[in-house]
Image (tube, rainbow, N blue to C red; front, side, top):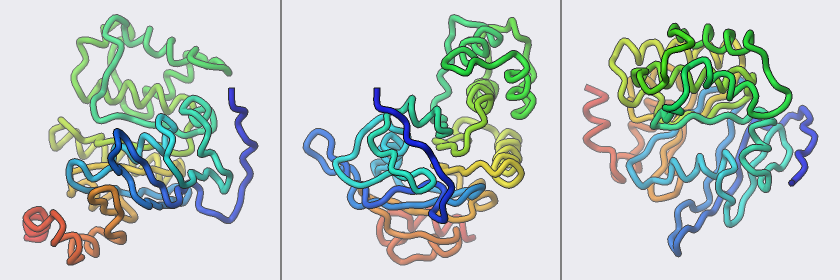
Length: 253
């Protein structure tokens, strides 16, 4: 098992990657991708299908090793650390599809999450996570019966029990109605601004990113083509020319 390095505070970005290259199946998936996020900052990542957003999250979370480049946490190189080691350092991740253990109840799911690795957590930690995300369901309710939003809340509550320092969010608003998106908006603001959790979020709903993202990074065909405020990137000719013309026009009307 690869030992986790000691993480020290530094003047560097809280979390960053530098010049990430990734090849899969003989294809170039990521080509020279770099990003950084400060403590408590929300960085939005947008781009069409096939842009490399999910693959970038695979590299940042530790599920896939890049061909070259670095992943840094508090200035320390964690590129070769696997997913579980990064999780113990405070790197969390949510997924576009909220897959829950259908054979368990909500309470059993929390227990499994509490005992996933040491230090084991108490039921009070589970209650903390549930209260934070506004999950109000019975402990004996089967997770298979939960609606999409409550599934997202359950998984996020299990993650927040561990007090992560960074969360990679993959389309948290997918499949949600407008009132639920508003609740996600409020929750992300709480996590980032009040709890100082750094968040990198892939999302297609521009109205959400426009309100919560401090900066937005645009990807296309495995490369970063623009970065800045939402207004700046939506008006970038490179973004319009690449793939975004219709979406941009609709967003600016």
